[in-house]
Length: 308
Length: 308
Image (cartoon, rainbow over all chains, first blue to last red; front, side, top):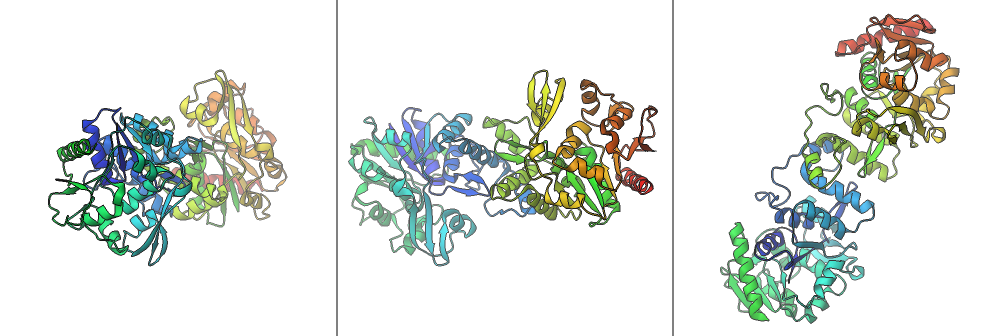
């Protein structure tokens, strides 16, 4: 059994690569929910949706978020009614939010909702939220404290960040499936996908008991760096590292995760590796094609086996 | 001031005709909410939407319901997720339901929501729900008791009806604007639009105090028959009259409303008028074009003046 910790786009890509190699009972994917929010009454879980849409092959590969062949009639009508339209809700994507909101209102857990969506989309690997309790990422920025989506989507990551808080994390329990996987004696590797360490991975690690479980489990913990040659493949990871006084490089990623990691996977282009203390695997980490995803997944799994 | 009582399609048509003749401060439209329901978490008010969409010129004239140039991506995605898709939610229409649900969840009244939608759609005449309290129409049928939408949409009005109940009506107060209009001394006519008497008009009349107010107000009460030559222009009015032991004809409509009415407007094609006790206006009541709507509105207003 392999456990992957995933945020949005980068996490979804590696998770898809792993799912292409591993059987349904060999892979479990725990997804960040710190970005979840309620937008005009709709419960939205952006990272879970990115992961499930990507696993189902329904994601928009060009935009990098949302569904392929999406349309925007709803959003235009919403704007006409005076609704807020800065978070782009596509007509097809909306079905997920309406059904999730409805199921949650009936008392289902987010895990149950996610399992139902996976089953409907034909996803056979286990996907679950990091927690069924609310955790919300807030950013203390130069223009005031912002919730994640306001910072990320509405403000397009422009405001300088001074601090990040994962509100509720210390009271949040891992979801049942996550807890079970963390305690699984057959668990042979924990892979931290190339998601934003501060915004996507840290909320997962901040959930009650997750970090200690990773440290105490005999399985190796491996991260894939989302930063290549000082730049984030996507999103504000490098910018955020810089603003928080960290080195925006693979060395910075290595230092950020510290002794939680048994190994770090970095890109072959990255020369700045002298300061990395963990064992490293040097390979192609940029996933542009489906084959790239599978190749990286295969490299990471082999690296994991070498660390046991 | 003219007060129109309206259900869905027929009501929306005559209301639009009246709005084409009367100024914003001369027409108030009270709309049936007995068909309202919550569908997978979304608060839907079908008659209010038909009236506002028609007044705004945004309605689909061919289908007779919903918005013109509608698309159905949401519905297909909803079905894929295992959602119920028998009530046809279009991508654009959905914005109304999402915003209404959101505003109601924030504590707005349905009247406030309706006013906001009207303002956003550029509707200057007053449109309000019959009540801000819930009234739900239930039909006792040969296959059991059905709520209105299950009967009307899912079962396509097929099951034989034995009885109709307007649950909550005796505890429901007229909305504030409706109450104010009913007490308006400048009110010079009350027009019952050609909507289904049993399913669309009766719920309005069943709201606390509405029927007595209509009877005691000096302004004439005029209905336009939705039945022409024994057939409903649209929907199950004639079928329902028959199943409930009433005469499916203009005479049956006249008898159904009884002494509530000062006048009844019937179609020129209708020959079966001998049994009608109220004063009648005979004219073209079939509204196919915008000019038809205005002509009928104008005829009805003139008839009203003759009855003062």
